[in-house]
Image (cartoon, rainbow, N blue to C red):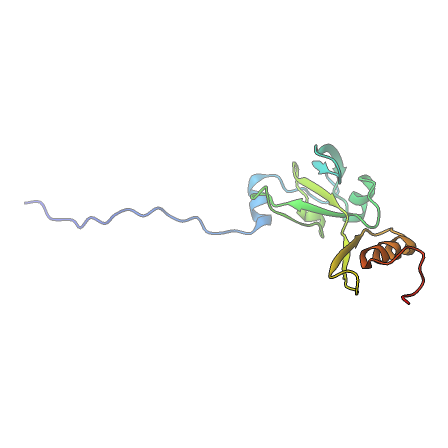
Amino acid sequence: LAQAVPVFPLRARRRPRDSAPAAMADAGREASPGAMVTVFVLFPGRTEAVCRDVSCASVPVLRQQLSLTVEQELTVNHPRHQGQFALLERVDQVFDGCSLKVFVPQHSIFVTSALAVRRPVAWYPGASLEDVEKAIVRAAGFEPGRSKVE
């Protein structure tokens, strides 16, 4: 007689979650400091990314190679989740074939006056004080050049 063997349904083995740097190392895409890597850079106002070969020595060197100004910030995509971007803070976030997005942070306030109710005013770094003041006066509904409310 054959002995009855209990049968259990097979479960797929789950792969343990690993960190992003470990995933990059597994994929062989992690860049060593100072190595040349190919990145795709999307600049503000452009619809197509530009392919560049850059050195991964440090973040300031990378910013200099991309000719970025002080106001501009860089974000880099996640190695496994291509649609997710994070602020570039360390050079080990850069890997061969990554996408970098350049953006300029926007400053904004809301203006409320007797003539206007909660109107947004936005400006970018580098805007002159006079330009910001003119935008606030216009949003408040006052005439340009008028120094005070009568």
